[in-house]
Length: 203
Image (cartoon, rainbow, N blue to C red; front, side):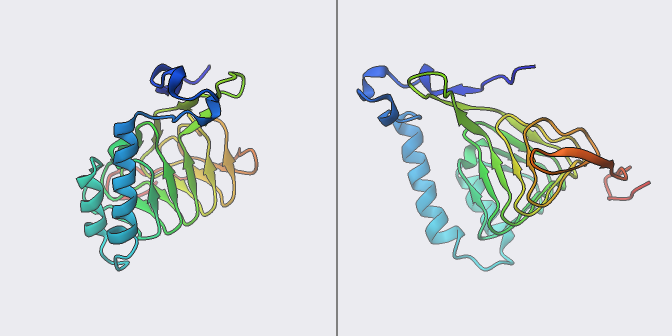
């Protein structure tokens, strides 16, 4: 089934913005100004903060519109493209070098982990359209899901509860709950033991 586009730049940016469609911005001015302000905040206050100050970085993300549950651990080397499109339940972790490109809303369930150098890509371009407009997708990373180091989740791909995407793997299709995936493109290689309660107990 085709993935539903949450944001299509062609619906928001007038053609007369630039003669060459490749020079047209993908987002309205207000959005671009917000990202400029967030980039400055990230550079000065977020990136330079000591590693243990997770609550400080969560506060900065909330100040720019993120919904953050308790005990989220976003490390200083992590990057969030648009905090106002970030929704996290409790105890979500993003390691150093992890990048969340959330041009549309991305929701993380409780205890979801994005390890070092992993990349969550929430947008792409329509390469069959001469104007090459940006398409952004709303996505969900389920509770207890683990995106391992240097793994990538493609645009519009949803990760089920408890799913694991192995180191360096690339998810191009939705990952089933509690499946373990590896490879490029990622394929299911085994089942994971399921969490049976909120405390993390397993069966």
